[in-house]
Length: 132
Image 1 (tube, rainbow, N blue to C red):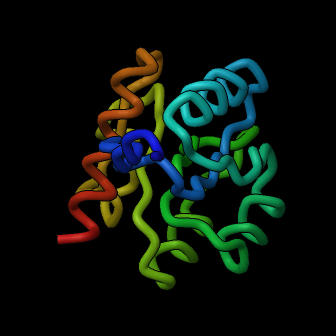
Image 2 (cartoon, rainbow, N blue to C red):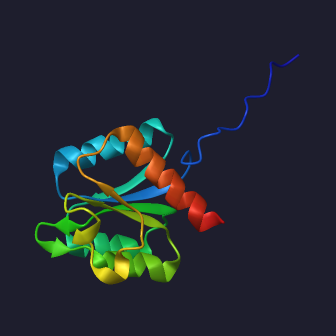
């Protein structure tokens, strides 16, 4: 006789492949830890625009978290590539909502510094919004 069947995870981020685009190593590690704890697979992290753009164009991802500024380069080309593929994403920024260029202001964004639980909630919301 076998034991009870484990219930499927109620965590919407579990099993998702999430692209991290972040040039600050400590922040990237924090994000990676949060996502791994939630059962996600981390793609990247990408710290440079060219690396991030290559992943955004071709990697198998379900969702992305994008630092708005990568060592002085705006992340908008990465956002555009993800949008063209229909992949939801959030911006992470220390500049606030008005630091985001006008065409992208309607996209979800989280202010730095953030708590791990806040990041997880923003990613869940972006995923839910894209699925509905």
